[in-house]
Every structure is written in structure tokens, then in C-alpha cells.
Image: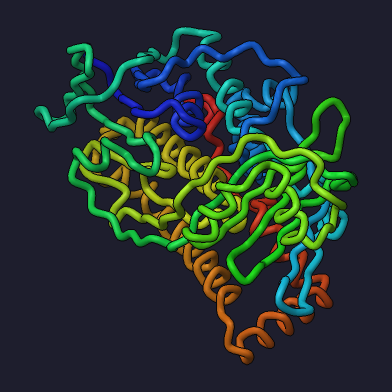
Length: 410
């Protein structure tokens, strides 16, 4: 099979890129090892443990590719406030959508909901060829492009290969792309819990001695007592917490959260995920580009991972659409380099910021504890500084490329 462009990985980032390019005139093939048929959505069903905090920039991208209505028709929880505090001191900071003249700061959405809304859009026409349930076996250069061999023996040849196959990207490894990576020596416990009190559409985050603990607001049939939690802890502490009964875990969780929403009444099944930071030394090779977690993974401190990936997809789509409009070879390294120059500095800056926060709040020496608590109180008292931080962190002022514009209008 011959195609212009292969995207390996039909997750949120890969599917967004495919939708952004579906009117480009390019032959696009999207390959994934799982079934891509969206399951019928039941609004009363349990929450998926993996969620994303979608920023304003991510919402605009998903709107442009047509997936946002499908997300809102399923299940999402808008949040208007964010409360962050140091559990080992007195520092705290509060962010509000009203302070930046916005209706919301973002939306907490289950990854499954985003994924199904994107696949639903892809299945509405035949502009993107979907190859599902097809495990990748081999990747090798072939002429001026790439040849992919799938587990069923099928071969797909393309001029441009996009790796969107996640943090443990097989494409990245088989293509020989080097990375810088290290373990945080922490694990994240994720699940959904129901508390006695409403979350009041607020995202809560407490920095504990073991690691950050986030309560992210969820909504089901108007019930605002559900939260998605992300609890970062050392490997030994995470193992201890995972071994607890639901009742004991609920008690420990409520205590770690200082009972801000009252007792934890119900706990869904838990997942435990090792935390590792990873960044590709280059996002591109001739005829190859890495996007999303295949290019970079960061600490889930601020829920920015998927937002960075969606911005990758938007910028790469913009670079490719402009190249096609100008008659350039879209797989050329000069074309792909425009995407890399736009995204790598932004991603590195976000990774450095998250790394700095993580180290600062893990620091126990008294001067550093005084510094972080004083810093939180000081920034909280400066509305203009807080507003600027919110606009930058949540992508409210992000200059997005016009990725959904038809080529003839570019």
C-alpha cells in the first residue's frame, strides 16, 4: 500500500493531526494496534481513571477539527477556579477565571471521551484511511520514504512518517531517535473518588512531603461531588497505598487532602503509573516527525502533557499545509524543521518549569520551604501577575496556527 503520510498512533494527538490534515489533498493513513470503534457512551457509567485537563488552546484546536461538540455531548467538567497550597507550610495561591475575564479555566475530560469524539469525526468520511488492530513490526527507510511492516504481513509505504504512538514509541526506537530521560523515582496513583462535599468547579492541588496530590473536578448527571485524583508518591509509599483496602485508602486520601471536600465516600479502581521524564534530542529526521508523548513526556504536575501534544499536532499540520500550498516537498527536513523550531523551545520551557516546581516542593531545607511559601503568598497578592500566569499556562493567549483553514484560503 502506498500513501503520502502515515501516522502511527490514533490516540488524542495522532487523531487530531489526521483530522487537521484531512482536507489537505494528501493521502493519509492512520495506523493503530487497537480497535478504533467508539463504544456507545453511557452518561451513568463509571469514570475512566485517565483524564486530561484541557486548556483553552486545546479546546480551540479540538473545535477546529470538529471534535469538541462530540466531547461536550458525552461528558466534561468545566472548572472556574484553581486552589494550590503547600501542605508543609502556610503558602497558598488561588486562580480564578473571572480574574482573566473568562468563563472557565479549562475542562477536565476523560481521555476515552476525547478519543471517541475524534474517531467519530474520522469515521464520518473516507478522507483518512484507518488501519486498526494492526500491530507495528518493522520500520525501515525505503528510497525517499519509509516502509512499515505490520504484524499481519501488510506493508505500507509513505514519504512521511509521523510517530504519535506514545511515551514508549516503537517508531522512535526503530527509527533510532535518541532521547534524554530519567526516572522521577515517584509513581502516580490515579482513580476517581466521590467526596461528601461539592468540588465547586475547582481544581485542587496540595503539595505533600511525598509529592503533589491533585483533586480534579468531574461531573456526572449534575453530581459535583466526584473528582479525579492524581497522587504522586515514592515507589514504596505508592505500593503501600495500592495495597490498602478501598476504605483505608479513602481515609488516607482524605487525610492527605486535609479533608478540603469532607470525607472521601467512594473510591473507584486504582491505577499506579511510574513517572519518567523523556525528551527526544530531535523531533525530526528526513521524512520523520515525532509528536506528543513520542517526543516528550513531563511530570503530571499541571496536567500539561496532552495540551503540549495537541499544540504539536497543530503546528505540524500548519507546517505541512503551507508546504503543500507552496509546492514544497512536505517530507523535506527544512519543512519539518519549521515545526521543530516552533515546538521544541516551548516544550523544553514547560518541562523545565515543571521540573523546577517539582524540585522546589520536594525540598526540605528550611530556607527553601520559607522561599516557596513566601513566593506563593506574594504571587497570590499580585492579581496582574496571577492573570498573566493563567493566560500563559492555560493557553488563553496562545497564537494558534489556522490549522483548519482550507489550503486555498491560506
